[in-house]
Each structure stands twice: as structure tokens, then as C-alpha cells.
Length: 160
Length: 160
DNA sequence: AGTGAAACGACCGTAGA
DNA sequence: TCTACGGTCGTTTCACT
Image (cartoon, rainbow over all chains, first blue to last red; front, side, top):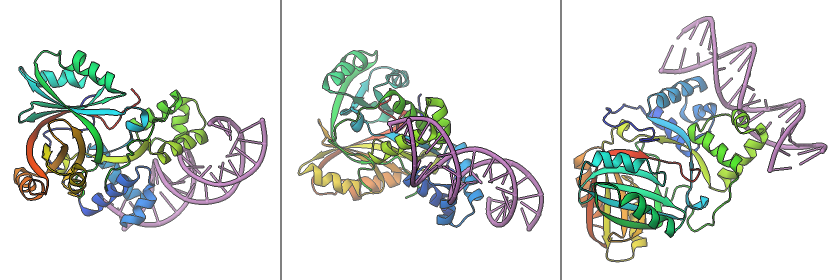
């Protein structure tokens, strides 16, 4: 549920160009066949499969379905900047348990935490803010940035 | 490159429980076979295939590889809050073209834009801020929130 | 870590309820 | 929109390099 698919504090894995190329293929289409990828990167089907297995087993990559909240009726998104009074780690765990919150990060700066929320409408957002976030122990202030338009969204890093 | 897989302003698609179940299966493993999914949700392989096709064609869902920036050596992430002087739409487009920026959203609030950056180290972050972001026309102020720990990350919404 | 080949299973198009 | 069914293609295992 929490910290989906990411490990923090691990050291970096060194990838060669072929593995990067394989990742790029799968970033474009996660269901592309290993045979096709093999043709594109110059490797046999079995070799591609072994590399993909290793990449997914080690947690460097995962192949998953990603859905568009807007198209599913969650038309109101916002980032909430949170100033905390107490232990930010405890607060982060509490925020992570709220299903309407899809993203929580501890930060250094004028906010201690950032949380992204996904709601069906404004009422849901108001309720969420007042009854689930602002009333948590240790929340001393919040600032809400309602999303107007998502311009760019990458699930894909590292192979630039 | 920009606005990957998302449409803004479309109306919501209504999904039945079976489609939601299919999406859940693919959120857990994007390469699960249609036959397996069919067994899990009580549908034939062909029916699952048709529904997945429709979901991906309409842009509600996409199946992609997602990688972990931390494990790939991009150890420094931050959210940049940006106050704009001019047209935020133009600025958003310019920001979206910067490869180190993986996320750009236009917001209402004390920031006009939020941009998430992924860097290999602090130097790269400083360079990025000073030579690629703060010097753009129309950027009147920035505030940087360096990530300390990612607590929760969902690529998956809408099927709660 | 890679290839190649054979058995198996998944995927795709089409037909029909 | 679903099931049923063949043909084709992808995946898996294994022996070998």
C-alpha cells in the first residue's frame, strides 16, 4: 500500500545501453513481446526475458497499468503543502493511509510534507481537508494548490 | 513527450465492476495473461482482451514500465513552486521541455506552477534551478522543496 | 550472459449467440 | 458484448556455447 515499488536509500544499479533500450521499449508499451524487443535492441528473445526478469526482480522497474483519474471521474486534484508541529514521519504515515491521497513526500523547505489528493469534486476536497488532514495531530498549517491543468507527467525516469 | 497519456477536460467513463477488476489485476502485474485475468474475473480470454483494448484505446488505462529513479542514481528529487509574471501556459510548455523535469502542473494558489525535478546530485539541481528554470521569462519567484523521503506513490487511481 | 530448438501456452481474427 | 475455436506467434524450458 505504501511506498509502492520504491526503495529508499539503496545504491544505484548500473545499467548498460541495452538494458536502457529495453526499458524504453517497455515504457512505450508494457506488453510489447520479448521477441519484438529483441529485434529492436539486437538480442534474442530469451536474453531480453532474462534481463526484464532481473530488472523487475530487483525493483528497478515494474510493468503496471496506470489509469487516468480525470477520465475516471476524479476531476479535482490538488497538492497540499503541510507545515508540521511534531514528528513528520508519524504524520507521513497517517497521511499515507488516507485513500484519497495518492502521493506523500517528506520535504525540506517551508513545507514539511507534500501530499497530492484526488477527489471527485470540490465538496470531497473540502471534506478531506477539514476532516481528514487539518485535524491530524501535528498539522499546524496547510496550503492547497488546486490543479488547473496537468501539463506533463512521467512515470519514466532514468533513461534520458 | 508532454501530457503523457492523459487528456484533460474529457468527461468520465463509467466502468462496471468487471472492468475495475481487470484494471486491478493489471495494476498488480501489467503482463498477466488475458486468460489468467479471465479466470480471476470470470470472463473468457477474448472478452478480457476486448475490454483491455477498449480501456487502452480510450486512454483510461495504459500499461507501461515504471522505473525507480533512486535505484537508477537519481538520488535528488525536489518539487519547485513557481510564481509566474506572464502567461502560465507558455511557461508550462517551456518547463515541460526540460528533461530533468518529470512533472508539471498549473495550479491555483500562491504558486502558479508546480514542477517536480529529478537529479543525480545537488550540483545538478542547483544548475537546473539557476540556468534552466529561474532564468525563464515570466518566472518571478521559485521555492524549492527538496525530497527527504517518499512515503507513498500511486500510479493507480480510480478503482478504490 | 548468450543462443537455438521444440513443446507449450497465449494471442488474434472471425463466426455465431 | 459475450463465447467458441483454429491458426499464428510468443513464451518457456533445456541443452549448449
